[in-house]
Image (cartoon, rainbow, N blue to C red; front, side):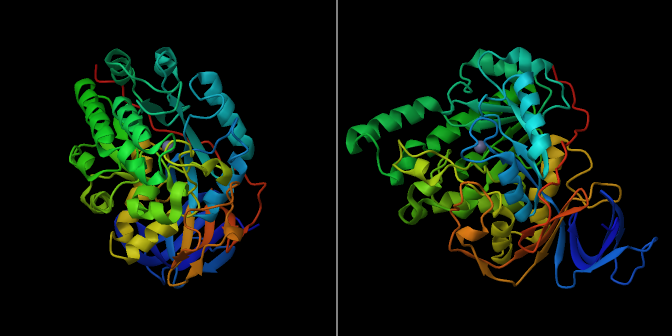
Length: 452
Ligand SMILES: [Zn+2]
């Protein structure tokens, strides 16, 4: 295997600029970046890849996935989902804690990370989940072990659900890690569900899902999280914003209180329930076209800081039923980058901004070391893309274990040609080149102490 690779003549998109040039990979790192097509590298390359007509980006960091491992591996596992990630140009993932056992103790986090070390093909990190009773675990977790704390503020994930001002304030006050919050107000949802069941029976049609998990439920909870973060000085990242109204609460200039948008809410609107039914059931719910337009506008005005997928696979048979019975969540990690590139073609955002939202900012928000940017000395996590190369998504292209996608039948216009993970060519034109290759656990820059 060649150890010094030159990818030349690609349009390189990085840190707000696009230019035709070369990236030189030496073993696992980026050794040199040449900013013009005819510049000559300092040392000759063993292998030259002519990428004329292609775009070269930093590998995507998906800061919100549920790989279901351990414990729910009939749906997904680190091996299958990380190959899906690589096929989608995603080179690093951050996994959420609602697995079995849930990652709410140091031991459970270490267990998950050791499973990932043996089976995850892309780079990985994970979150520790907050519960009503694990404040000591959150306070004492070694800051280099996790990306942050995941807090379900009044959502529906059982044990990992924290309500009550004292418990919440303690978590916000005492954490020096970023706190990622799922914001939906339980009381509002419960009242909506009760009213809908009274009118429509035990399992209301999926079309009612956004009225049950309503704008009001999201707004109340997000407003509360922001209020707590302002009071305590905590570093808050609100996950999967779904409504235009919540966006009013964010200030693009404030880098301590940030927001994430996820693929389902950027791609679909409530008009898609008719076509896709419970397949696109997720929490918080996909809302109106006006909400989607608001989210898309916030991609460029700074109110959305990161794009994640909330990749949350279920088997199709678990997706049957309506607003009460169907499971919530859908797979997306393999098709997030190509879906967002569709939006680039539609003029929703420039490609430089896409790189900001999917590569640079996740690294910044979680303080990930040496990744997320094309910089000399950084890890060689790269994705090579070909524009104007249409293809239609059929199930045989899907790497996720659940083997379905809400995007089936869609024609994408960009193609992932190659994905390099730590300098290793893991995905090449439709093929995984060696699934024995493993990603690495990511490392973090020092975290600052809480304000008080
Ligand atoms: Zn999630």
